[in-house]
Image (cartoon, rainbow, N blue to C red):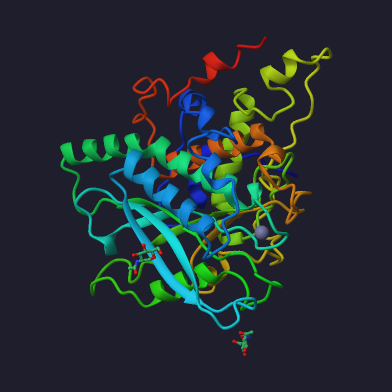
Length: 392
Ligand SMILES: *[C@@H]1O[C@H](CO)[C@@H](O)[C@H](O)[C@H]1NC(C)=O
Ligand SMILES: *[C@@H]1O[C@H](CO)[C@@H](O)[C@H](O)[C@H]1NC(C)=O
Ligand SMILES: [Zn+2]
């Protein structure tokens, strides 16, 4: 039989030392939508990424600059680092190609780096060399945009939470949690996917961090150890994704994200749902339709993991013991590695839903309930309840 556990009992599955707490219904519903910033032609966040951005080309440099500008302008409290490496590729004729990973980190004030465990939100920003002109909207322009929006949406709440902790004189033993954004370069193969021709940026970064030691006696030995959970988003933004839970050791985190999805659907805040108000308004037959979740394995048993997974940027990190939550659909989107994986073929409702899911997950991970202020910035924090019912 199937036991349905109330979500609060999920706390029991959280590995020792990690706390996690749910957001309220009203917070879930009020989380800011990306709105115009995800317009595929003019949107401040997404449009600049929807171009060719093959590693080592001007397109790649322009997208990297977009990330830097975004953080410098909107998120000045985050520390930005660029991690550089070079490698030959099967098509570079012996020439070294540069790979630049973008890293933005926000830790609690006054914390020392070896003492902070971080939620890493990860996507790759390079695009595939072939077919020529390939944009890679789901692969992974949209996931990068989702992460930028999520970072912006939790930033003020993080500030508020940490200010409150400082004001209370929180003691040093308190769990120190931070957030890290990794936008990785060189995920795609230049010729044919192999261990050498793929994951250029991820391999270099995992290797660098493996031997970058925090001060002796630190809680976390290296920046790799500092990653409590590596959440990798890839191939997101097409309709009706089917995203399995790949790893037993992070199934508890997957279930937390699935629970958020379930709640968002019940709250009417999941735009791609067939029962969303906008869809119902356009449909004669108002009978509720079956909800097919993105995260299909919410009820998968912990003992049913067989070990299959998709090769992606997490591999060099996982090989070094980092805990991975891989959010990638199987099967891949129909447009996978095709020229029509472009802005026009994104399902913007699904893009927005993923964005809300990831934002909420980060908010729960960072225990931000009570610290959001949705009225402060009207433009940014478009209220779902207000915008949704403006149906012509
Ligand atoms: C890394 O590469 C970027 C972009 O090419 C460059 O601006 C930056 O100075 C480099 N950083 C280091 C530490 O070499
Ligand atoms: C790929 O890696 C293998 C093993 O590390 C090495 O022997 C081989 O020469 C590499 N191939 C290329 C094309 O770099
Ligand atoms: Zn790809």
